[in-house]
Length: 359
Image (cartoon, rainbow, N blue to C red; front, top):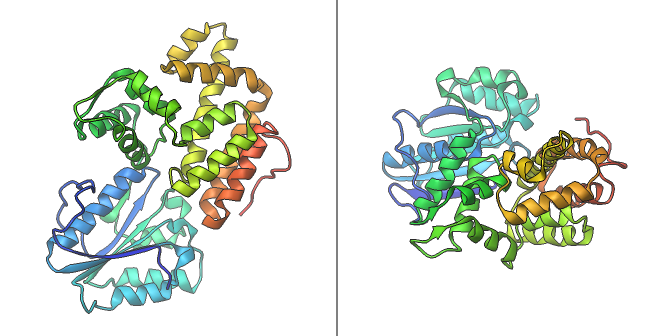
């Protein structure tokens, strides 16, 4: 059985840099949990609570994270049922269970759900909803153990940015917060990671203004998803491909995060074009969209000039299509597929040989 991550931990021992999870409710360990929905940050916090609850029982625990395409589920069930020689409890997180298909593998998992082991906790996660899973899987999990994690509302995202900076002994003004949210993914985990990267640029007790964030985003030597969008707007294909390679090698963005950023920004560009078509002044349109940074305002006005209205719908369809591919295909295909995506946006305006994908 292959696994993407495995670790052992002793109760109470935790990395000093790790975010401390909220207090763990009682009764989290044992049995099966089903965690659904697109909000990865709160989902990760809940998994951390489960792990903390297992640690609080004393003794060493084992945590295993894996995916259906990377695991023999018959072996995984055997692992769940086998008591650990050196551990008191085992937490297994099986991610993206919407990829499960009918057959012996699924049957083995369903069989485990009817009689789970006392010394193991199985956590099933999916970015989708119950309707996206094999029908028998949600029925296997008690309703009390099924949770949906929705994307954060805008005010929750603003609070998350303020909280992330405050926890690092920094203050941030409203415009700087809005600038971060312009390009930040909707997912809470990615937003927390981004805020951590930005906060590390400033010494403690700094008051962070919008100009400070712009200075980091546009004058830092590090490539980011922000510099990638700048090159997309400039229709610089070679620059896009070089930035993409740097991001993936440095792990400063994954396929889903990059596509989400592009989808969000092109969606805002479409709205910007609509407001201009309604005879709104550019400054008023930018203010309505809460595009506050001077550099970002120039970026959107340049994007309006460089990307004709007729290209907007094909590009958005392309991004939706790629999001499906990024979630279904193996990680080894991430870079060539992103390269193809950028080519069809920058060079073809969403048109070309990219055909609709069918499972």
